[in-house]
Length: 203
Image (cartoon, rainbow, N blue to C red; front, side):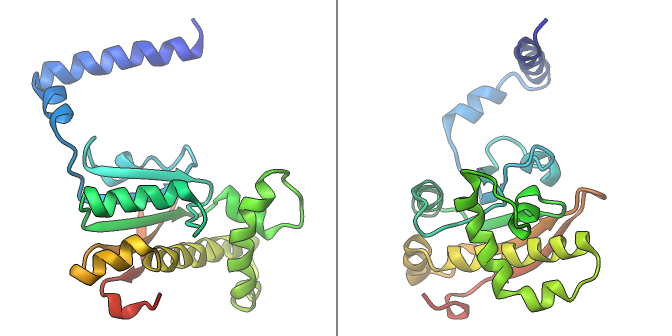
């Protein structure tokens, strides 16, 4: 059996078990989407948003890319943010990076990664802006982990400056924007930054 076929079989088993526990599960899920949270995370396969937060399908609206970057010219992430804020009315946006991030480590190196170089430039800029603090750390792993934290903070700031958020804040103080980092070694989430009120950020 091919590995991809196994995924299809696992899907059928999951559907069967789910319906045994709750015959109306899929009917309810198909009727409405009303998540309270937008999750912007890294594409790393070891950081599954629903799993590490204990949430179920329908509770998180999710966008993922390499090193959880939010760029002002990325129509993909900007569309996700706008839809989440304008139409889904999410109350919280969570940017979640993680320690041991390959994208962050790559951005700290002098190597070329082909097409990824343009993407990694966004993280390199964060590194350059905080290089004094980061380079003062002796351990290479701790340095990359510190950059992961600075990167999350920068993406929270980037989100707060988008038109979608600024327009939402004109009407109320939602959504709140949170910066988290996930530790692969112990499974714990750490909050490192938070924007609650429009007054905290200038566009």
